[in-house]
Image (cartoon, rainbow over all chains, first blue to last red; front, side, top):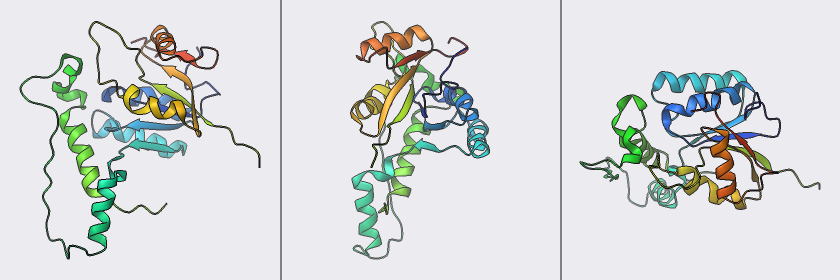
Length: 141
Length: 78
C-alpha cells in the first residue's frame, strides 16, 4: 500500500501532529531512510522519544526537532550581551513565562489534561521556554 | 552551475479548515505552511492526514495542485 514512507519523491517528512502520534507518524519514514522533522515534544514520554532518537541514529538520517526559541532575536541578543560582559558576571537569573491556561481548557486541546498524551502546557510551554533561556546564543553560521 | 532541486517535503498534520469540533492547534497551518509555500529551498509534495480523504480535502482547501501534491492517510486510518 503506498504511503508517505515508501514514496520515493519525498525527501523530508515533517510531523506536526499531536505529540503521542509523532513516533508512529515518522518511524516508517526513518526506516525508509528519509530525513525527518519532528515538533517538540518528540513523543509522549522519555522512552518513546528515545525509541525515535535511537532509530534516527541507527538509520543515520538527518533530523530536526522543532525547538526554534534559541534562534529568536531576543534570545540571541540577550546571549551576546552576556557573552560580551556588558552586564558583568551573571550569578543568577530569573525567568518568568506565561502560557495560555487557567481553569478552563479549550475543547480542541482537551488532550492537554490527559497526562499520558504527554503534550500539554508544561511539556510544550515549559520545554520551549527552557530552550529559549538555555540555548539563546550567538550561533555561528 | 546547475540549479539544485528543492527538498521535497511530506507534511503530516495540515488540516483543512472545517466547522464543527476542530482538534489540535492547527500548528502546521500557522507555522509550517506559510514558509513552505514560498520557500526557494523546499516544496510540499505530499500531505498526510488521518485519512487520504482528509488529505485530499486539505490539498483542495489550501489550493495545492492535486497533480503535484499526493494525499496520504495513516495505515490505521485514524
